[in-house]
Image (cartoon, rainbow, N blue to C red; front, top):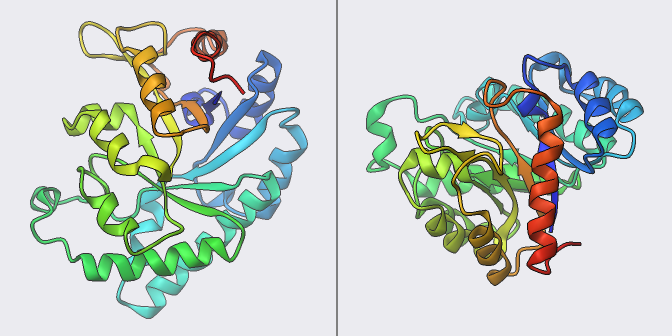
Length: 269
């Protein structure tokens, strides 16, 4: 396993073209790039990032998902075509950055009634996900569905239904989102199993507030052991909100903390 940081953790602190050099200077080895708006989707901006990222390996790209991902499932041909055109730009960005994975949310469960899943049409969902997964695969990028409380994979059971029909679909375990959804992260981990591609990690303090790994009470040692048990050997990507920590050097301290645990448990790459 390896550790890294999502540039989402620096949202509103640093633009991506500033965040990657910062992480490189801190000695962070791996990153997820959180592309935040339409002007950042595409080859030109990705080339700008590639020129300044230094030795940082880009694990994955992530976008502001509500901007076009839900429209990839739209029944209207023009709306869907426009969304796929933007997806193509993002995948071009991933190629330029050398990122093999795309962190995907899919639909947005905006209405409260949709969160129960009682009206989920899995036949239509599978058709949509298959189309998107094939599109990504044809461009050399793996589609990875993340558990997110307000989006497609908002509860245990969704991933297994989709993955049973879409062999190329990967999974992203988000510890904070599992906590928000009130499903134990272990259940998501069990469901994703060998399809798990990488993990978004964060800590939580005694009052339930998100914080950086090593600053709270979350049992990372048990998490790592459970990841090892399912054969996981990917990246632990720190993803917190910009107000969840103080100095930016704390990001590297958290990577060091996780690396020490990986070394202790014999799973460091």
